[in-house]
Length: 319
Image (spheres, rainbow, N blue to C red):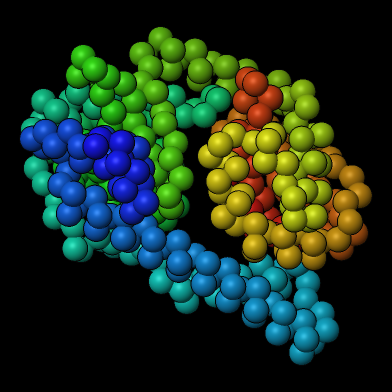
């Protein structure tokens, strides 16, 4: 009976973490109604993302048919202008007016305060100030620390980017906070909790990479395979982390024509290590140059890869 329930809830689109929260039905856990409302919003955002990608591709094709030319810079401007006209999360509100915020006891908020490992080198810091939690992770559209608003004792949304980001604090069987699960447009990332010593070690490791400015072994070859795979419509998913693989699959319909527009691969130049620890490369193709950031995990998987939107002559990217 329990397996049938899990299977049916998975069909409705709920994650395993959400199913666990519903089936436990303990006090303070989100109700089935709340979770289904959140999942409905997730499916709406996915549909909106697909429609936005289709609109961008069609607008670019129409421009090419009319003018027979479209530079990479013009394409980037076209994408940005179209995205500005699409429905985006409000930067002035939480973006979840139909979700009821709840009050969480300060002692519970204090139990979430601490350090969490983010990726290979990153450290996320969470702390309580008054009746609110704050997080230092960068979120598009935000500046500095971001407040987290609770919909249950364990589930929070940020002030900015609420339509795309959801944080759920995890506990082990003993009830101790063991990590935080971040959902970004249906993709889940888990940041395990770490102590202050480990956080300092990770920061020191990142500082050393920034000082040495040396690429990770294999990152250049991995990036070339990724770019050429996207152009061919067959990215090397087996070389990616599970989360990156999900993101690339979601964005491939938009990534492929844009990567193909750059033309055949020519060469790669290492540009240094950026502030988050990723290797930066300029990828030279027959019709332009794009700047990529890539980070390999300890098992040589591609943990993160994206294109720099803000750099001239760059195209669209994926996180």
